Image (cartoon, rainbow over all chains, first blue to last red; front, side, top):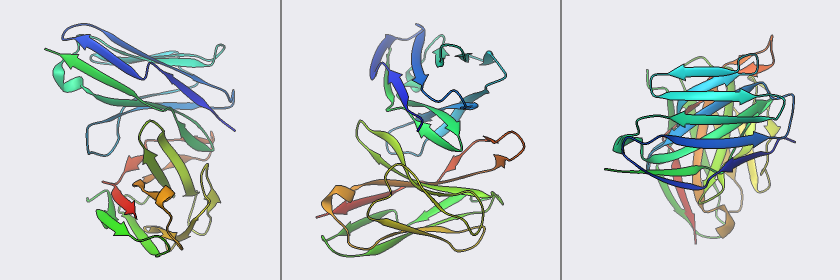
Length: 109
Length: 117
């Protein structure tokens, strides 16, 4: 079955810096790759997603890139702000969604 | 629209007790899911229902049963609770693109925090 690895497990940056979180997946049939943000005590919420027929997608300060050949995808957050502090999960979908183990991002003012 | 709702929000059980977690969605989604979330483990799929009338095992189904009561409701039952089932449980729903065998956004409920002593 699908396996998703996510790195790093924790990431500390200064406000205004960029943050990059990387994921690899094992099943080449996976075709949908969402990223979720989860604040403490809250439910996960989708922040951006990408499909296998697209290499990159951007939404304001957030971007996701996908390399199907290498089976990895990354989340890029530019100009980080303290409110970006949360746990971020990547996931890969083929018949069902499989999540990475999460990255705790801390943005210091 | 309430989205995805779950009851209860919190529950404490003794080992061996049973309980049912309820989930409902009002977005007319075909697919529904139950996950558990443990520290450092991400979200792990327990069971899912691709459409009304079908259910399938996920990654960690042991100790659980599910019922897709109708299109809106998907319940998770613990028949004999164990301390290892202490976790936060999330229900989710989504639409699925059956043409491309792909998914659209999964919407999560607020979660149920379950403690088994």
